[in-house]
Amino acid sequence: MTGARWLAALLRAVREPPLGHSPSEPDTGQLPDNPAEQAFARWTWAGARLAFFWIGGAFALYVSGVLPPGQPIAEVERQFHLPAGRFVAETGAPRGWSWLQHLGQGDALSLAGLVFTVAVLALAYLATLRVLLRQRDWLYAALVAAQIGVFVWAALAP
Image (spheres, helix red, strand yellow):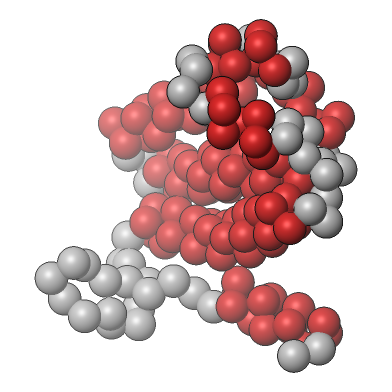
C-alpha cells in the first residue's frame, strides 16, 4: 500500500463513528442515545485509533533502532525492577516534562503517544462536561470536572 493510500485509510478509520454496544449484545452500529455519551465516544474513538498507530509506529522505530533510544534497551531491562525515582536517579532518565526535549529518541516518542492518549481522554471529558453543563446535570458535571482536575494535577505534579 502506498503512503498516500495508507494515510487515506488511516484518516477514514479515524473519522468512522464508534459503534454502540454492550458486552451482552452484538454491535448495533449506532451511537449511544445520550448526548454526553456521544461526545465522549466520538473523542475517545478517534483518539484511541490515532494513539494506537502513533504508539505502534514509535515503538517499531524504537526497537528497530531507526530512532536512537534515550536509555539503551539493555539498561532499561537491567533496571526495570527499580522504583521510578531510583530508576531516574541511577540512569539519568528525564524527569517530569523534560522528556519533551528528547522526542527524536524512540523511547520518548513512544512515551509521547501515551501522553497523547491521556490528553485525548482529557479532551473527551471536556467535551462531555460541556454537554452535561448544557443539560444542567450538575452531579455528573461535578464528577467529570473532578476527573479533569485529576488530569491537570497529574500533568502539573513534579
